[in-house]
Length: 613
Image (cartoon, rainbow, N blue to C red):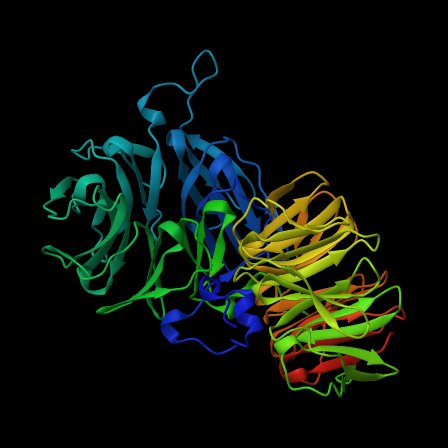
C-alpha cells in the first residue's frame, strides 16, 4: 500500500484490495514522532544535513537532530510564518507582530518586532506589522514582506524598511536569477525590485490573492494563490506564470482549492494548499496527488535529499517519498529467524477476517467470507456450520456461553453448539467490524459509519458514538473503559456514560487497539503506524513497518501486530522487530492463546502459528 488514505478503508482492505495505484495517484506519507496535535499549526521549515526546523503558531520552533524532536525556546509566543538562511548559524525567521528572529547555531534571539506598550500589550506601531515571508541570497542579503505593503531589507548587517508603493498585503517574495526580487500578495499585486533598489508594480490581469511564488529557469516565476467566489461559496485556486514580460493563468480548464505553497522537486513543481490539496505540475500537466489528509497544508520545506516536506494544520508533517521517512525514523529492525511462523491447514480458501481466543474454554475460532467459522480442535482446524451467507468479521462469547458471529449488513448470529440462529439484525448496509466482551454479560460491537452496539443482558441497543467515521477495532479494560479506533488517527473513548473523541497523534487510519492496562495501550494502522499510550499521552513509534498493520494483540511480555503482504511485527518490551512470516498473504487478524502461542489469519484461508518464546 502507498499510504494514500483518501481512497482506502479497512472495509476495502477486507475485500482484498491490495492492488497498486497509478503514478498520478501516488500517496504522501505522514512523518510521525513530533508531539503535535489539533492545536498545532505549522507554517514553514528549514533543513540541512544536520537536522530540520519546523515553525508555527504560538512561537513553535521544533528541531529534529536526526534522532529526536525537541521544542526550542522562542523569545516571543507569536506565530512564526517563514524561515530562511544561508546555514544553521545564520538562520532567520519572520512572523506575527513584525517578529524577526535570528539563530546563531545554538540559540534564537529576537531582532525586531513584538514591541510592547506600557501595559505590556503589543503596541500599535509600524514595527509590529505582521510579516509572512522571507527570502535571501548566498551573499547574505534578504527581504521580508508582510501586511500593508511592508517590505524589509537586510544588507548583511541591519534591517531597513523599503518603500513598496502599495498598501496591499504581501505574502510571498522570491529572488530571480538576475538578482531582481519579486513580491506578490492581495488582489493580484505583483512588485519587482530592480537592481537599483526601487520597487515597481507589474500589471497582473489575474486579481488573485497570491500566497506563494517560485522562481523557475529562464527567468520565469510561478505564482499561486486563490480567490473567493460567491457562486462556489469558497476559495478557488489560481496558478499564474510570469514569463519575464507578461502573466498567463495556467490550467484554466481545471478547478483547484486555494494554494498556499510551491516547491521544486526532481519530479516537477509541487503545489499545495487547502483541504489537503497537493498537485504535481510538470509542463502542461497538473496531477492531483493523494495527501492522506483533509487539513490545510501551508508550507513546503526543501530536504537535503531533494524531496520536500509539507507542513500545515493539526500538526501535519508529510513527505512525498516513502524513502524520505528514513531521515526521520529507521525501519523496524528485521527479525533474525525466518521460521518463527508456521502455516497451518485451514481447510478453506475463503478470506479470513477474524480470529478469536475464548479464554473460558481456551479455544480458538476463525471467521471470514460467506459465513465461514472455523474452530481449532486438538491441533486441527474444523469448519462449523456457516453463520449465514454473509461475511463474518469478528467473534465473541454469547451471554449464555454460546458463540456470537457479527459482520456484514449489521447481522449478529448465535451458535448454541449445534445450529446458528439470528441474534440481531440492524437491517442496514453497515458492517460490524469488531466486538469486545467483558466476560460478564456486557458486549460492545463497532463498525462502519460510527456504529456502536451494546448488549447489557436483554437486547442489543445502538449507542450514539458521536462520529460518522468507521470504527475498525474495539478493546476494553472493563465495561466502563473502552477504546475504539478509526479514520485519521481517531480514538473514541467510552467512560461508562458517553463516548468522547480524541486523536492519537497521527493522521493515518487506525485499524486495531489492544492494551494491558489503561496506561499501556497500543494502536496500529495504515503504512505501518504504531502508537502507544503511557497513561498521559500518545507516542507514535518513530519506527515504521511500511506495510499496513491491521490487527494486534499481546501478553504480559510481548505484543504482536500483523498486516498486509504477510507483515508481522513483534514488540519485545523495548523495541519493535519485523517478524518474518514466510508468506505474502495479507494477514487481517491475530490472537494469542493462554499458553502465549500466536495465531494469525488472512487471505485465501491463510492461518499461521507462532510458538511461545
